[in-house]
Length: 161
Image (cartoon, rainbow, N blue to C red; front, side, top):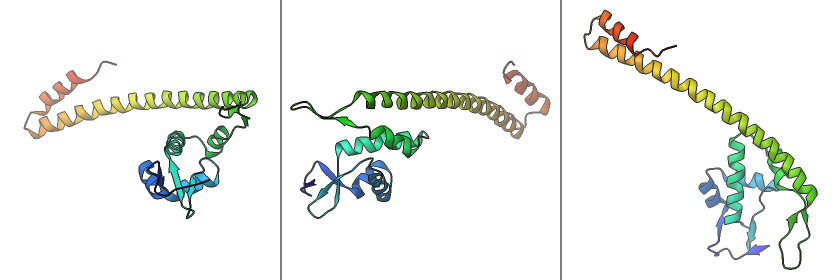
């Protein structure tokens, strides 16, 4: 399919890459994998539509969460049923079942990642509090406060175990 290069509904690979924060090569690679196949201008240039950008943004979010391109590609390339008269193609029941399994695995992976990030945030917050107490102690000492007074204040600020 080709489209008029002047169409305001499409953007070039360079502009699409800039909007998504990736290189044009990344978008071309995703095209090679069949993840998103942009339309072509009469001159053969890749032109991305809003739906392409949305799909690519989702792929990039999934990649940032650790999903493989193989998994993403498999999920996005499920076979479609022939459309009913005047309708759009739809996923077959077999495709929907496969997709359900894939999404379930992805959801479980994300659930585990969220649990891990929450644990890391809790640990980071505890370390942050400790560093604030350490900095406060150093500031008190630099301000000329006697060691005993600074240590006593530090003991008072220490969280209960």
